Image 1 (cartoon, rainbow, N blue to C red):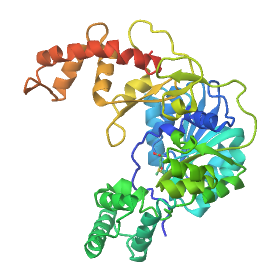
Image 2 (image 1 turned 180 degrees about the horizontal axis):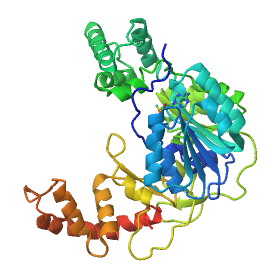
Image 3 (image 1 turned 120 degrees about the vertical axis):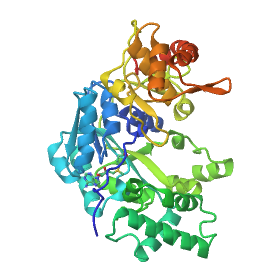
Image 4 (image 1 turned 180 degrees about the vertical axis):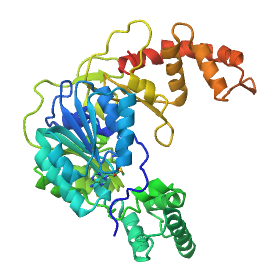
Length: 443
Ligand SMILES: C[S@@+](CC[C@H](N)C(=O)[O-])C[C@H]1O[C@@H](n2cnc3c(N)ncnc32)[C@H](O)[C@@H]1O
């Protein structure tokens, strides 16, 4: 059977939970050590796709060194293009498989694999484990995500049936494969309309599959080695590389009770750990953090508190996203807002289904997600200089043929647009801009 698909490129994604600052927060919640995140360290993403997240992290942590590894040359070329456009001297994109990367890369403090473990074959998994065993420094952290059992058991059964029906391992062109799959699913639903009842994950998959785009389908359920796994078996695999489980990258899962109703939380407290949690929650996807025993950062984390408060936050505040680790002090605002070359570039890139704009925040060492309007306002204010933001944004909207609805009509002419945009620019400068400066997205 063919291996991991390389013929169709995977779309760029933003994975905020692989950021070293986020991994440090997971370790902090677990009371475990982590490498320092406010001074030089080395990070590697294995199976980085187009490398968007690693590039973003390099921009957000300019004092640290970043590596992205992927064996698809088209992915690596895209990662290098963005690194060049963003003028990032501290990132390298390697067109290597995991085995070759083990010999080529230096020792590392953080390694992340998102969307990889579930989809690669046994040989690639062994290569990943050998990489981690050899390249991760003592005290280093690893992020690994995967489709989880028992939450994915229904989907695994569906996939097993599709494989047995000869729908997965075939050499037809992808559009034909997808059409056959959609046809078979339609027959299945017609023959047994309730087959996904009681399993919301399976029901959602059955709904989504026929509409999935080619790249999504080929890299996901149609990848030949796709499988779902129990936390315990991934944990056992990581133990062979000398790694201990630290916690869950979905922060709230680390709080006692994990948000479960009282009777379930009490059952969980009585024992059984992640296996009981997964049985109760039936999550389809897990993101776990592991650690190689060893030295930890000597100084405690500093925090960026969204409420503006000082001091160490509570675990509940961190788990709710109300405070994130601080990696660098914000520079004092000086005159006009300035965007880094990376942020100027990514303000124009729509990432993900909502077409979000994601810029690097150097204070928090990670991404800052903006909606399209905020991205336009920021671009205009940064490019236009004092007082010129409204005119610049109006000209851009008019040139792109976009309008703004006001008083029951759509305004599209530059003068009318400028009139409507001026108060929004003023509001942006008073509220969003200071916040973006505090996050280190704008200097
Ligand atoms: C589903 S994509 C995930 C990409 C990225 N981490 C993300 O979350 O957007 C998996 C990636 O792993 C890469 N990959 C799979 N097997 C590999 C191997 N043996 N060596 C290097 N890269 C591999 C693929 O080319 C693909 O880009």
